[in-house]
Length: 240
Image (cartoon, rainbow, N blue to C red; front, side, top):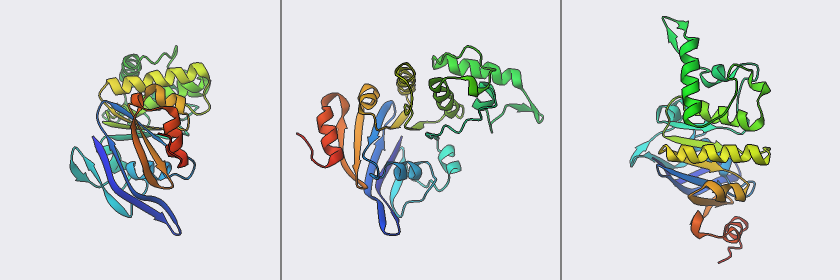
């Protein structure tokens, strides 16, 4: 659904990305891993339209596309859930799901329609929140992450980018988020998962792409690759 080929980005003396390529097929979870400074965040910013690459090409369904702003990414069906979630904690779940995309008729909000759509969406994703009219501040960390991911689906994207979705979550909350990622894959979406947690990555990903010092350091089928091999690719001492 989305591919990057030969992408490079330099910040003055720092070469953040150097001839990086990545493919995101439909119905797959691709994990992007690497040490700090490997270029993961820069690549996500390129795919989400936050920064423009110095070189390289982005394509969708085999046709070249230009993503020069987050609006362009949204128009092409690319949704990004950032690590900070960007939720309004004083608003309830329904308001957060439709923030900036409120359902209206003749410029009048339609709260009942939004609440019904929110319940249908959360039910389809098996997200369990007892009262969707409580402020998000009262939800657990896993529930907040689920709301942020669900909000990304309101615009019916084709590609979902998740930046460290299980960071700072407990065991039970992490399991809930990983189950949600699997359901995104089952819906036929292309999912890019950025994570430092190799256990989480191996639990849900179909393929693992490793970046090292801004360059591709390997692409591995998760089911056929050991954790030691992935660690070796990350550190530069690939274990066969």
